[in-house]
Amino acid sequence: MNQEAMQILVVDDEEAILDAVEIYFQRKGYSIHVARNGMQGIDIIEKKSIRCVFTDINMPEMNGLEFAERVREIDNTLPVIIMTGTPSIESMVQTLRNGVVDYLIKPINLEQMELTAQRVMRERKTFIENLILKEELARQKRLEKLNRELVCRAQDLNILNEIMEDFSETDSTDMAYDKVVELGTEKLLADQAFFHLYSHEDGSLIQMACRSKKSLEKDSPGEPWQDIPPQIKGYLLQLIQENNTPCLVCPPDEAFVQNRKVYSCMAAPLKIRNKLFGIVSAFHFTQDRSFSEKDIYYLNFIAQRAATSIENIALYGNMMGNLYSTLLAFVTALEARDRYTSRHSIRVARYAMDMAIHMGCTQEEIEIIDMAGHLHDIGKIGIPDHILLKPGKLTDEEYEIIKAHPIIGADIIGRLGLWDEETDIILYHHERMDGTGYPEGLKGGAIPKLARIIAVADAYDAMASDRSYRRKIAKKEVIRLIHEQSGRSFDPDVVHILLERCHSEEWDAIYVI
Ligand SMILES: [Fe+2]
Image 1 (cartoon, protein in one colour):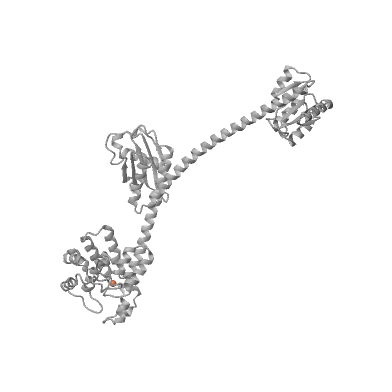
Image 2 (tube, rainbow, N blue to C red):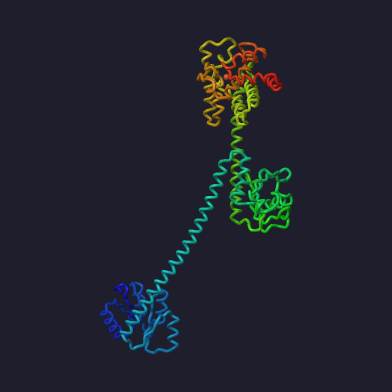
């Protein structure tokens, strides 16, 4: 043991004992401290790294037992050995109660004293090592527990992130409803999951989406529910309305024994602006599975994400609707300046949509052509009135200015960055199949298909209507002129459809708009 580890304190009011002890232990290489009373002893303990304390019992002011008690308060691992001249069972018991580890009988045998010091210091070392080991063990256990919690939390976060990502991809309310039930069966492993809209008018629940786990019939024989049975639906709605929070129904009420027994069920409200919008519900039909508190937490998170997503879709739709209405108002105002072009864009859009439908275009293409048809001439906003409304023939310079309107229109719509396909149609609606059109002189298939449809609809309506510079041309002649330009100005496929459709009731109805 080094000097630091061998510091011993001896407290006694007898000078002779202290002297003898000091000399003996110093000679043996210990760092020995002596105190004449308890107070001095405490003072030394507070300043030095004492490893072992010997104390007399009978001392003035503070006796050995009181001193031992004080030592224990300071450091309960510090061994205290009592030195007494009058040992009795009673005092021995008392010393042990005060945390004294041993006692020596006076007169003191110094060698015995040293052996005792060595033993108690060794015991203390082992005790402290055990204590450290115990603490280390406890620390490790705490760490393991913390690790487990962390892994659990990381898994939670992972699932929450996946749910968030899933909803970020939804761009329609139907997709959001489907996503809710998909997550219910795939992430929460429900046998069946439903999403119902809540009707504030009659308080009913209208099913919008449902999904069953693939193995449902195998695990739990019987048909999956087409919809939640009315009794259970009413029960869940009442529960949600009363609590206004997600509910875990486990074990379920008797009401849950319908055509198949529900063993576990949960439901969460989907609220938009704090108003009940719908209910998400999930069911287990097998006894060995039941939803946990964590499942209800996830279900609630799914409902919240769906609510945000649905609200955003609605806001976006509203914003788009408002923007489109504003652009249409520009076109209407533009056409209102010239009585000859009034409602031209509406008719072009209708003729083009009708042809697109009969050419087998997709729903998305039809929607694009609807918008582009209405906005195709919006660029005329940038053409001065004296040119746009000129009654006579245009000069070459004036015609060049008019020819800029597809570029101006595409610039206006393109800047919004929302409608790329529509922008292209606006830009290319005056291109011709043989490359003699404008603004870029694109040829044939290089012209977007929907722009080729608009071009035919535009030419048809322009010729069939009065213009400031000429009277309208008879329908028969219009058809002949367009037919004549098939493959030159116009796409033959589109002209073919026009020839089929131009005598239909629908076209007659558009003509008088
Ligand atoms: Fe145009």
